[in-house]
Length: 363
Image 1 (cartoon, rainbow, N blue to C red):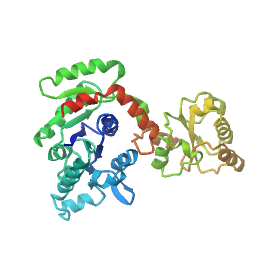
Image 2 (cartoon, rainbow, N blue to C red):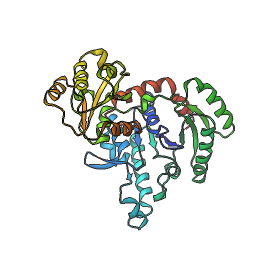
Image 3 (tube, rainbow, N blue to C red):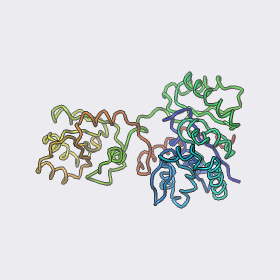
């Protein structure tokens, strides 16, 4: 019989996909066959000729189960879905039937099934399929991921629990994520006090790590809808810092933080040449992940030749450098199938921080 768990969250950006990846990795150490499902996909992509949720596409690619991707993503919310559902063009019971059918087929194939919700608990209400109802209909115990802290976690959990209780969903685990490292033990103590007697296990996941929110070069390329040039082997490299190359070349290079994505105006020949020249020096390669070359002015011919010969990763964009800087600084990175460095980091941390056996024992 397949064991299963539904991964919900009290809000966006709590880390559902990170936790799902972690549980997949840990479950594979215990179970031979572990599957994944995203019943409702609000963010879809075209994958192998099929329209599926982007997380389902990512999991199917990372774990080599592309043949199951349609079952992993039975319902997607495209631009027309809301209108067609509300107009009655889509039968009101169709989404639920598709989810239940897909879940049953995955249960027949796998020993352990991870079911990831979409966004916060209310997402999907537009088609009468919020996260809480999906968990209840699929008869999956719920692990609710929260942010860090104490007061805000208690408040957000209580708010979300009311919806899960209304739908008769079974919340078994509250998992506080993105914790302040030196407050981890204290946070867990008080959260246990807050939910004592409610029959819910309280546990913790990752400490807050900016690295897990850092984008890869390939992710930035997709965000900007522009090609990543240079060494393609660096596309999964994480950019821990984003720096605007506005000072003199010497000052910019001297102040590079580890794995920096450097934004340089296209007319800054001396800085572009210096950065290209340093790409082959290990010390600087570790500090300089790549370049975004911004501005309307064409890069000079000789500088372009030096750039291409160095094979340094770069993206060419015509917007001004300050606009790109602020756009990237405000962006929250999500995990994609090409983010192997980040996925490997998540898996290694999960082995230290998440007690899979304890979670498995109560579902």
